[in-house]
Image (cartoon, rainbow, N blue to C red; front, top):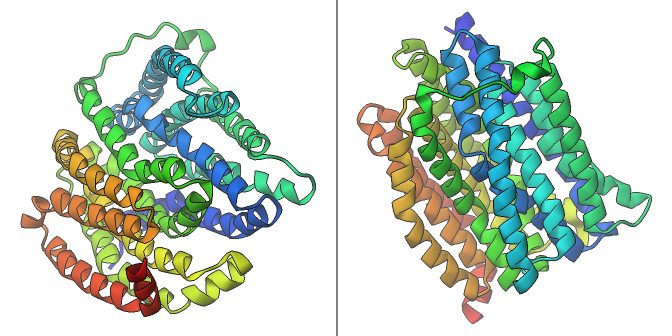
Length: 440
């Protein structure tokens, strides 16, 4: 029987996940429009600019996660929130120095154009601030507000500007600049909302001292590794294969990756709850309910949708649809599902104070992953690259969960479900595609 506390958990998880669901609908509309009016290459460059800003959580140095945890543990929420935000603003000087050095290097080696660099730098700065603001909303359990700011910062800012292509031709730099204006507005509005009762001068007199600061380096390492795992494939595809390949690769990956919004929404609620009271039985039960949902329900939903992928992409993308996109979507669906399971494991480690153990596991595995990814990239085959990503997610989940599996039996069942899912996945991929792959 579901009691009031469980209902609140499910409601907050739903609110935290809602921006992702709306983002899916916006993407379904905006991607075909961009492909029609801007072209595949333009869309690849636009998405690449957004991918560049994904390094922002690294420059946040884990302060977003620290905000969520420390605010949930302190009675004086506003003061704690201001302390973390103050530290974030102070860190911007370090970020500006790093970006200045990168700019100087770019002037000599011309990795990217100057305009792209300035746009990406501004996006990184805004996202660094937003990650901390997001953590403050999370720690104060303002999940309705968290839903709204996430929707505009990640969903509206990405998917709304391409609609302007229907009325006037813009290049990807112009479209991205509009995205930045939306993001900057959300950052300003969020700060004013959070600290409307605090005088501005109060912000500048803070010193920063938290017991949780001792773990900051491990939160920073965890963020760095998470970004490295998530975007390295896209950077390498852009530079070694080109923006057209990046567009073909990122369309199914982005669409299926929206599945992770559910686990991220659940994790957003679990993290401050676990940190607040580590041994609370109710929290443990919520964690178990979440695991059961992702282990047993989500795979069945994915397998059901496999039957409609061909029809969906033909309707959605029209002439831009092909068998490669369909097969990549099937692979990335399984990748996204296993990634959801990993999100729950990471929340468990971070909330219970074991972020160091998770970071060490990820750090040890990364050289192996990068080696195989690079070999796949130089073969210029998107299918092989996606398989490497799939294998990476499986191993990371096993590494993260194997210690917890001694306490939670459901995790052991998840290993069996993953094996069954892989068999079903490769059975569902078109045989003609494998023959074409072998001929190449």
